[in-house]
Every structure is written in C-alpha cells, then in structure tokens.
Image (cartoon, rainbow, N blue to C red; front, side, top):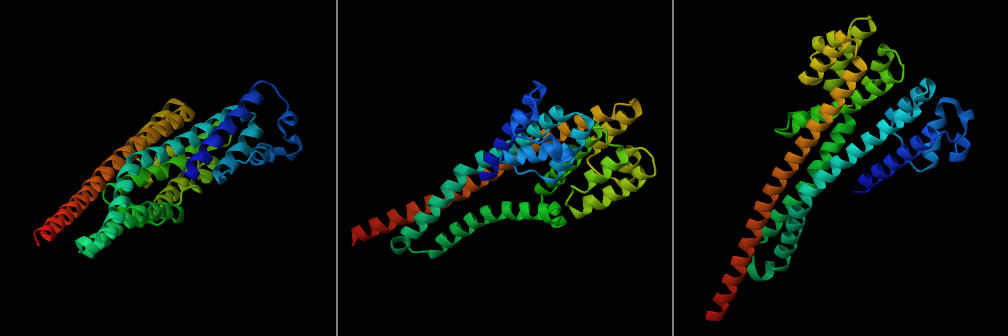
Length: 296
C-alpha cells in the first residue's frame, strides 16, 4: 500500500511538471536547473520526492534531448497509475478474505483451551503466512530474474506478460524520443529481469543490431507474447512502428490488468472458503463442547 501511494504521488508530479512545461513556464519557476543538461528532468522530479526507476531515468534523458519532455512525462504518469491500479486490484480482491483468515487464526488461538485441536490454529496460521509469503516471493523472483516463478500454474503466464511491460515501455518511449531502434532495443532489453525472457530478447537484439527488422528478431527468438509480435510486425511493414509499440503496450497492460483482477478474485474466493470452513468448525466445536458440559 505504501508503494501504491508513492506511485500515485509520482504520477501527480509527472503530470504537474508536464503541464507547467506545456504552458511555457521556465524551469527555474519549477525549481529546476537547465544547466544540468539531460539530467535536468530527473533532478527536478527527485527534488519533488519522486523515486525514479532506471527506465524512467533513460526515458527522461532521451526526451529532454528530443524536446518531448511533456509527452514523455505524461506517459510516465500513465505507467505509474497503471502500476498503482495493479496493486489496488490485488488488494481489493484479497483484503476481506485475508482479514477473515487473520480473525480465524485469532479465534483458533483464543478458543484452543476450550475447543482443543491446536492443529486448527496451526492450519489457519499457516494459510495466513502462505498468503502473505507467496506474493512477496513472486515480487522477489521478478526482481532477481528467477524463472521458477513462470512455471507456476495460472501465475506463470501472467508473470511473463507482466515482465514484458518495462521492455515495451522503455522501447516505445525511447524510440518515440528519437533514439535509433538498435540503441533503444538494447536499453529496453536491459530492463527485463527474468533470465529466460532476457535470453530470448538477446537473440532478437543480435538480429536488430545487424540492421534487420525487429519483428524478424522477435519471431526468431520466440520472444514476447504472440499478439505483441503480430502488432509490431504489422507496424514495421506499414512504417508505423512507434504507434504499434504504443498499441502493443496498451494491449499488454489491459490484458495483464484483467489477469491480475481475475487471479485476485479466484484467490480471494479460495481463501474465503477455507477461512469460513475453519471458522464454522470452531463454532461447531465450541458449542458442541459447551452443551456437552451443560449436560454434565
């Protein structure tokens, strides 16, 4: 939740600076220093408390050189809001069942002396710990490039699509800022952490560095989602690669967002059923023991 708030604050700062520049205000009026060259925008946003990613650093530098600062910062704001929305959807799907599971764990602990069966408490506590540990492990795997996470049922395909997003964001932003495709692709490839995906993109990068079409490299390496490869191939053939990159990025964001929402909903239902079952069993055991004691 802290990260969600930070992303939303960053999006507001990106849009505020973009609006001021589009209105013609000088950098000095915003607290910036044009003498810092290509690092001007990054320094200004960091002064405002925005923690920039390596990708955002690269994109802001390229946009400053190309004179596209406003458009690029609005794109960065949209990406930050999308990231915040991902987290909000996950939290919305999981907060109630997680709360129920936590209360069930507490109820198991407090009624153990009356009801007995300490394994109920251990089960509930284990489920709660697992529900908290699995998302943290997935996040760590994405950051460290552990491909094991891509083999998980249901989650693996979603993780692969999620891993494409920084690549597409960087490639689209750099290419739109006037950076040659070969240089933009190499920088975009560096934003991918998953080892398997990065290796496939390295094959595609070798093709791009030879001056051949990006679509050929992606097809040869079987890299990225099939929809992405199709969109980029069409864009290159028609000379609209920049627009195709934007459409591919939008499509992957939307599909990934729906996938996360669906996964959160199903996970929430599963947790709810398990927690409700444990709670119902505790109630039955408690009142069963109470009436048995009354008969004595």
